[in-house]
Image (tube, rainbow, N blue to C red; front, side, top):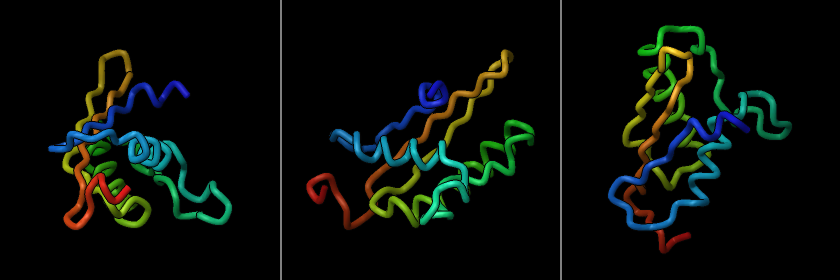
Length: 107
């Protein structure tokens, strides 16, 4: 998918490979809510996509944090940066860290 190249997952304070978390997080971001049978809550609603960029960044971050709590509980979203170019392209950087009580050796 072309969209996956526009999403960058950045570990905060981790000197580990986060390939599994990276794949799970990208799947969560790219999936639309209510489209996966058996897991209708997985994915993001995207209700905010037509809003101004600063609102999209804020609402996207809030929804992503809520979904990560449910579907990827071992990580925490440290920061979400959204950069919209004049050409309409949007680059997203999601910074993640292990939650207290989890670490890379648990994986």
